[in-house]
Image 1 (cartoon, rainbow, N blue to C red):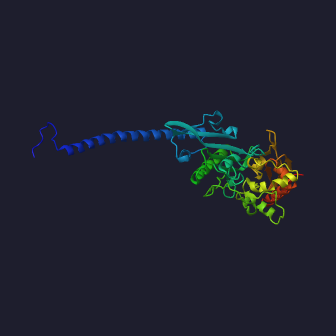
Image 2: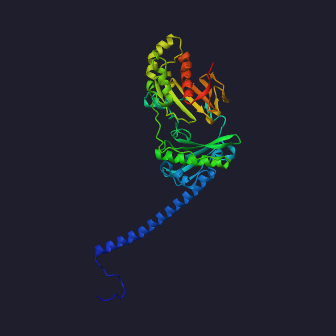
Image 3: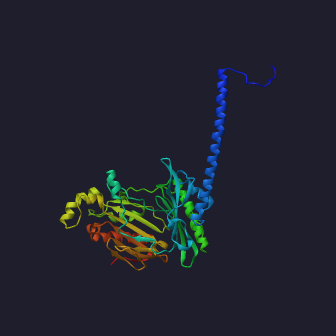
Amino acid sequence: MRPSTGGPLPDRGRWRNAVNLLLCIAGVGGVVLGGWALHGSYQSWQHRGESRTAIREACADLIEADEADEVMRLDGGRDRVRPSAVKSRRQLDLDQLPDECVLVAAQEQDGKTVWLVHFGLKVHSLPQQGLHVLDPDDEAFDPGIHQRAGEDVTDQVGDPLPSPLGDGSAGAYSARTVSVTAGCVQPVVGKTSFRASATARYGDPTDKERKALALIARTAAVKAAERSGCAVTPPELPTALPAQGRTLGPAEQGTGSCAWYAAFLRGRQDRERLPDKALGVPVSEHGGSESCVLALDTDTRGGIHARLVADGVKAGGPSDRWTNPWWLQTFSYFGDDAAGTEVRPFTKKGTPIAPGQAGRDFLVLYASATCQGRPAVLGMTTAYRYDEVLGPRLDEVFTAYATEAAARRGCTELTLPG
């Protein structure tokens, strides 16, 4: 073989020339695509860095850098996150609690970038007046959803009831929110604890995402407390936060926060107008709140309608059974949760419930007690007109509930409505 002296490349055949050309084109294409990939990776890295900063600044540095990454991983993951455009929610202010930060994330829809609500963090210092409100306007069911699905409106509640985190001392969680409470070793300027609530604002999160929300909320609660001079021990979180159920079951099989009602029904001969469905949550030794939902099945209600009308009870028409289900819901609040509880009947302004107070205000009944030196409020709301249907039985049901809840938590000085 003689050495090359320059000139055109030798012709190695049409097939090999075509292969060489394709390899050259692929090489150039690889360089171009690789460049775009590197550019895209750099841009994503830059967006995530900017998002971390935005998350921490908006939420008053209550969220650590690794937890800012957890915020971005929610809902399948987002590279671009920024504060909400709503001025009151743009930045959390620890000097004006309760306050919150709300973050929006960039998503692609039909080739366009849109910013949708993604995450929220709210911080309370406790006790706080108006933390909980016994309000008859708060409906346990969503008739519209079930009516469209052709189901009985009383089959499922609109939103799952909050469940305790472990023994309840760490806080509670619901479908999209985890609230963690950090108690002060010694009260500071009237503050006994701090609570942070981390919320997924895009739908029902997964078990893994709920755990991330719990860690974010715990860090925020502890840091908020410490910045206010409140020494705390970080609360222990449970290893699992399973999704709560929404479906009601037979009332006589009620458990947890509804076990008292199953005991109330036991041995009763006349249960015609009483709720026959129940949904409770696990009860906890140190939880700040718990609830139970009771309802009268729509078909059962239809069966007794004629007898109710004959007795002079305003039972409503056939359509009313689907748009106005008959239900009762209990609300137990203890300690700091009780100290901020109000009753709001028809007015917009709530009235605080202090120890030694009890009453009945339209569709709300409430009692008070003292548990280990701390206040407790035991309330019940009822659906419109169902109070008339139950008559004196409503007082019997409420007394059974309040008495059992107070006894189970070791409360004294129970004051019931007159």
